Length: 356
Ligand code: SF4
Ligand SMILES: [Zn+2]
Image (cartoon, rainbow, N blue to C red; front, side, top):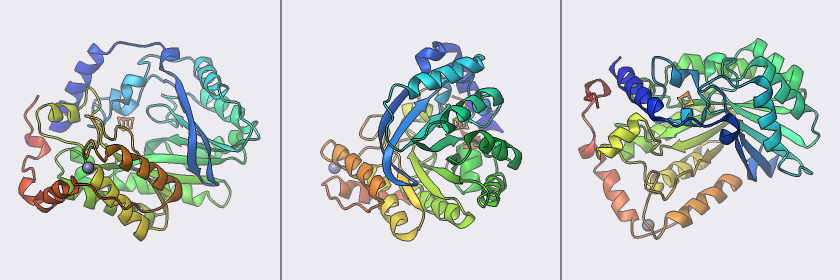
């Protein structure tokens, strides 16, 4: 598949140039209020490095919008080192009330090639012993999710809530395969969700789906429509929560190459507001809009006057699951773009993209 070759080529060049950082330089964390399954509570976000996402390091070159690989060690990280880095980050915060942990590994926490079973169990055992930790949220591709693995997770995590977030990105097969290069099918995703659902009676397990807003070769109107359709699909198949992640321009990706040539622009913030207002009215499951990169050159953008206000409103609306009302002069320009979206529609299919 040509998009995979192109992707792989861009990824390989990026990895050659990438300045390696040690695992201790890569681990980081932050603390903020978030909407947990138990209402608004504090959440510690922790990133620990691993050798890197297997999908990105493999022959496919990974997903077209993602360079989380640059937060990875690209070499083996010792089990004790992963655990100790995690613990160091966790212990930076004086924990004395209920909280949720979001543990990111820039890939799949449940892939034993990224986080070994031993390192995983050490982290789970450690968290299970802390009375204030109520939830652990991790990310994984669907192929690593199976009944035995989940049962094993709960042997260590005990009665804490465990949420697995899966990057479905789009329920549209063409978009997911050809524009994002996700490399798994809707059936793979549904199978993982079914596995999670089948264990709900015995374990405190939940699922979340990430939905990409505006993949490459998608106009503004299509981006809104597909994101909403994907969220509805997720609710229909029994996903517990959805989180929209508007594309930002990551370094060393196909998205960046297109953006550099003026062939791609991240979504307008108005489009993200439109998505939120739709799903908050039409869906019963909780939904979130990631605001990373909002108002920056490489992220969703409206105008200097309203970028910041809207970003703050969206953060608030995530916490309250509310809709948003806001007006600004730049909205007319966005409306014009939505109206003329079909005229601007790219006729270039990924397989015809020139090798960059
Ligand atoms: S989005 Fe996930 S699966 Fe895709 S390359 Fe990034 S970390 Fe890997
Ligand atoms: Zn504006």
